[in-house]
Image (tube, one colour):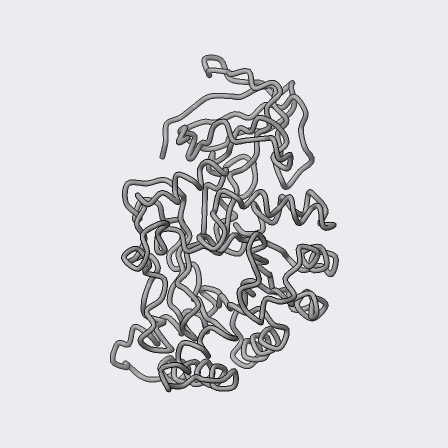
Length: 379
């Protein structure tokens, strides 16, 4: 644990899980938050205090769906390790094993105030592999890990249908894609029920999903694909997260009733395929209004990760409540990734991962002036 101990006084503090605090005080001890309060919060004798008047202190932003480090920026095929597109089911592969923490995207994440991400395999396969939750600073990925695995990536819709249809292999249709999913889970059920089976890495991962140790991260855009995701999850009884959810607003009441979170986006990009034709920033507000737990994603490098907060601004402009919007890039993604005991809000006992902004983070003119992870300044 970091030994960083200090206090900041006078800033507007945004705890996320409580009301904003004007002229607030945040106390950091040994790399963790020990107290957050108003101007009258006592600071222990001997603890350095810095005046942060006029600044805003906000938890590190979190993007729960990225390919940071596995799809390196400006590296072309040599730096693209997002998809092992040789088999529709590669549950056994791990994003963890393809992350390069020295690629420029990590420095850009800090510039945009993004201090934690979920790194996913891509969406070329029906089952793409294990995802991992990491912080955005470290010499090598093992010391950056928050939770591994943090889920399993799967894809419905155009991507696997195109990839394997072009190879003249199953699946070449949506029904074939669902069939691959169901077949894989039946095999995992049989593996789980067997007495002392031979070790199988693919089935081991799927059993973790069936046991609800980790969530199923379902790439899906169109409402019919979302319905398939709901149907298969209900059949096999696993925890589902909907990634992208372009048309999730059309089924928002059903999604909310089942308590399924939606990681919505990306927003700052073109409609690159048929299934994204109904991508609108207003859809985020519709999901939130229905009671869906919402997170917003860049899908980096589809949208450069430093623009996560710009997407939040777009959603607010399109009707999303600003407090809900801030939750969508802090505590909500932390919950989805299973790390909300450590990140996502400014509360006593959590990691001291936060940014000092020049002003309101939802003001286009505000910028990150300093970023801290475990109480140590990293940018």
